Length: 115
Length: 115
Image 1 (tube, rainbow over the protein chains, first blue to last red):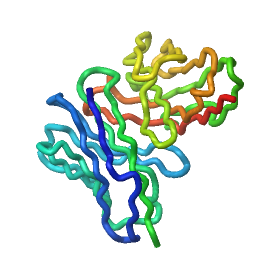
Image 2 (cartoon, chains in turn brown, orange; image 1 turned 135 degrees about the vertical axis):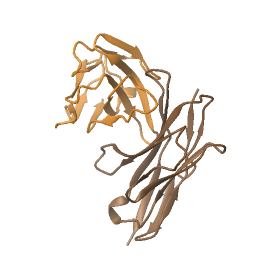
Image 3 (cartoon, rainbow over the protein chains, first blue to last red; image 1 turned 60 degrees about the vertical axis):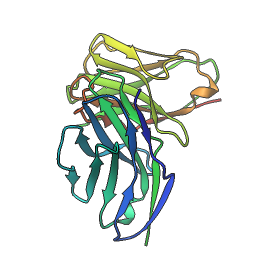
């Protein structure tokens, strides 16, 4: 079974600084995807970034990048130049190629950006 | 494009009542799913569907029924509401049948309270 671990229940970062949110995963599958979602206080789930297990380069989307270390089974999210609007819960998730039910979420990290 | 829509946004039920949470998507996605989010936890999969006429159970299916008569709609039925079903419910969809490369897009959520 897949499992996602996010060891940081809460993080603080100063505005304009970079921050890394940790995510480790446990899977025996060869083909899988890793996702990060943002959940602001309004409650919606916003897709941020995706990394495939066979992708050799780390994924980037604007200020978001995913530090993918396959051997360590880690998929950390890096947010550069933090903004006040980045304050939210962040969830790491994984999906493998077994159809249907294998989209598994971690418990989340609450990020607070300080002015 | 409306994306994934959910109704209602808020609902209060009494123990034993039944109700249906509505979910619709206009992206012609094959895969749809329902999650619940409890405080301090990530999302847990309740039921999913890989296409019209096909549904299956996720991690926490007890007390819930689903059907998928059309590609667009995926309602979630609470048969006899219990206080343990107090949660925020999210519907999600993705392009194909839950493969590792498929990003899931989420609806805005329904906050359900069972008294």
